[in-house]
Length: 505
Image (tube, rainbow, N blue to C red):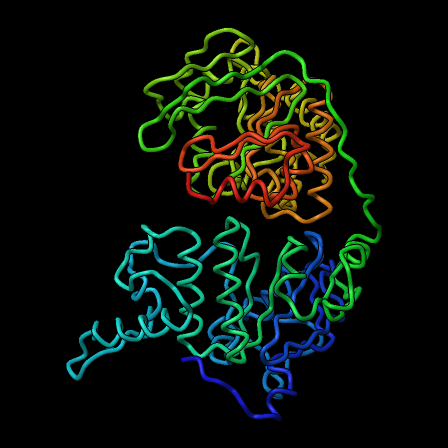
């Protein structure tokens, strides 16, 4: 369990120190002389673009990989973790972006998996297990019932169970890999409150995030990686966002100046649309050459609206028009025939074919376009893949490489390219930059803006308010499956969006 650590000597000795850590794969050096310290009661952020070496460093700290240079020092003792179990025994716990809970088990069973308390007869003592889970949950302010099945919990609640599990094994150092990637603003606040409690108890926390504003809110220190090397390390109070960006990507991004777009005819018109239990009386329009953002908290109905538009759920009333013509959309194929494409929020579970090539991933949504008399024309398919790579600035050696070898940002560009294969005029983007680094975000933004300049109508769903404010001409805020308000670019601000999203009607 968590204990207050008051020893003065311990407070000035790093809980975890990486000294000159290196790692290479088949001659490709992905980490080169990386060093950092994690102090008791400190939140130490690690930032860097995809491919900077963050994931490899995390896996070394967690015992998945072993370094081929340098060393790890835990509580003053040199260690070499040969497995995650050894890292865990040393008090180093990694909570990955993809959570590792068993969905069919309860929260308490997940907490004690592999070390169930047993009575004198060898039977699992559920009373002891429940009391232990409840004690940790109360320490961390977690509102989950220990007996709740994990599959019924939200992602945010599952993440809290993972953290509770780490605390129950006496973690000294907690590594959080993109912990806010799937959380809305309210749940981010809950997570940060939990991190503050852990910091006050003397844990060292490594916090990996693409969201730079989070670094300045929660971290004490930040280390920047680029191409496997440390390019800067400093107290957060001593640096600004420009300092971070310059060290992450080797250059600064100029501030984006939004410009008014010339919106043409309405492309997508939704009138009084209702889906039982999900949406109620939704009305909005998206014009040609316009980006309309959908903002709101988790459960507000944003993804549900996109699913209704592409025929994955059945409205009980209301109407959809596409370029002024009534549309009855019963399936994604029917939506595609009308020129509507959807890019899912979950590229790993619902989007990518990880073991297939970039070419195959980019063209699978519309194979008829690349076939003649039922036979796929590989040359035509390959030509589209090359054009897509150029149009969306996908960074790769060849369209023939497996898509799983690409960075998250480049994978996301390929999914957008897949949507473009149906030659849409209306594009629905659900969390298009989730889990990608700042450089890839800028490239995806540029790609979206080029599409809009060519007349594409875009409905953008995003939990990143900075992203919504940057890209969108209008912002529709949903709350409880209803339209709470619609904001023009001039009216929109983070405060206005959050007030509309969170305040009771």
